[in-house]
Length: 120
Image 1 (spheres, rainbow, N blue to C red):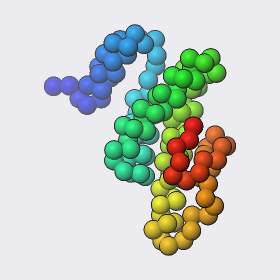
Image 2: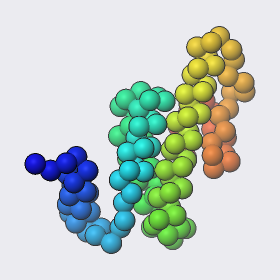
Image 3: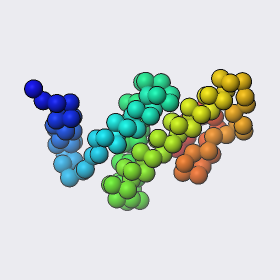
Image 4: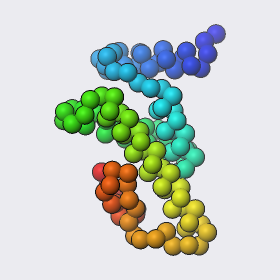
């Protein structure tokens, strides 16, 4: 019987091949780590949503020629992780009865996104 790690490695290779992305290196542990942060900082269903959006951001950045695959992927994972942690901190402040500060949340990319409003 295969271990979970072996199964995930095999699954990753199969998906990459199906999408004709065999040359893409996916850090499975990093993806799972970001999913875990999102699941614990937001809500469990945020994990697949977060990793999907981080992957989409990576693909768009690479397609536009703005960054190599590895850099774009690491940047997207860092943004996703930081936004999830920031969300948890804001929620903790709100639950404690403290105002979360301003009406805007600063994202790691240095842009401000109004709370509750989808951003880039």
